[in-house]
Image (tube, rainbow over all chains, first blue to last red; front, side, top):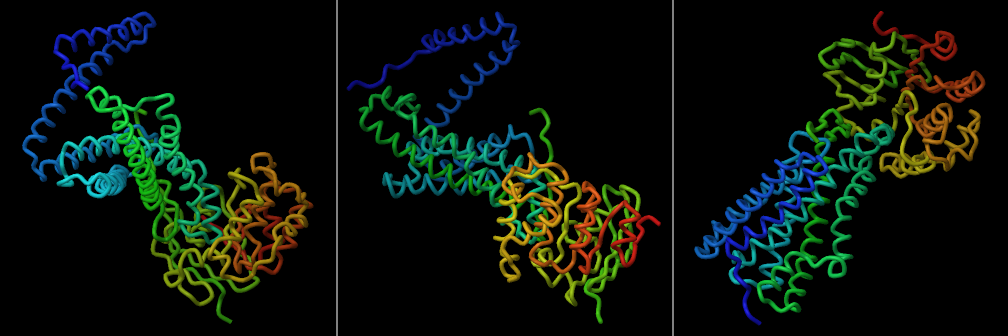
Length: 267
Length: 208
């Protein structure tokens, strides 16, 4: 099998003309999205080109510290993104998301690189960074949904929670049904994805590997690995984030501190 | 005889507003304090503070000779049953809530369980047994109030903190509830002076 056809900047410019379709629809229906489309398209180009340059540098220098710094930056950005669109907030929610993401995604990718694939060294950027990105990108969606559900259930269902507390429930006993519901909500997109993968969707990573000239069978195996990694990281990340959320919204004296919740503005 | 319950230095501040300050309270077994005062004066906050659902703000609480600092909040609340005002619509059914309460560690350890005690209590107050399996959202305010009161006071708590527990009940049901609660120590909030006269051994007027 031959390698990929290299895309020139001219071909990219040709592809950019496709975005005009979006612009025309926006103008026709008066959606007022023209400016946002332009910004989004520009961001796509700038962010991906920058990523390309950064990764070329990282792959060539192959410096462990540099790889880890990049992973840390990815976690911080993912944590910010995961709680950006939640309808409610509490002080420290971003740190909670960050801890959950770091532990869950970090442990999963480490297990994949060092144990399952057996990459030498385990921090080899060509494996670590793309895998980490895939895992973070999916786990952050689950964590965002789980946190959102946990906060709304505690807020809207606070009467039942307080009734149980008043009858002697510990904070964990009172929050248990809420936490279970929140974890379930956070895991649904991942379960859906695992169910339809290969039938309705050909995932981005597999597409990329096949375009890059890898045999579909090898690409499929990598994709299976990635789906399981995403599954494990999402389950652990959502559970961790929801437990941290419960810890934040109750105090040590088993009181619900719903006043710590703030409605997020602009969502 | 030492009191069943003692509180000193009860103070509550909400959003910078002092509701009450330096309040003291003492209750012996079988006594009922009728807690009165205009709306918004802090009666609910006082009950919540006694149940340790609101911060103590330096108050000293003592139940059955033990200071609140020495008793974990869940064990404390299992003995001091606080009945939430207004019988809110909850998730699920009354039967599921009763089951959840029965499964709490603080309740299991008390060894006072009698299956269906809450159902029997509420039946005495005129609640049809079928109501237990209906969602809270399909019950009337009066039905919810009887079911929540029954779940809260079943399993023999030793002090009742009642926040207008009969506000939505007709005279017959109110009389039945009052009869069931006779002889049990309580702090009983009510806006009805006739009820205070019937149930309270003493009254405490907030804001007086």
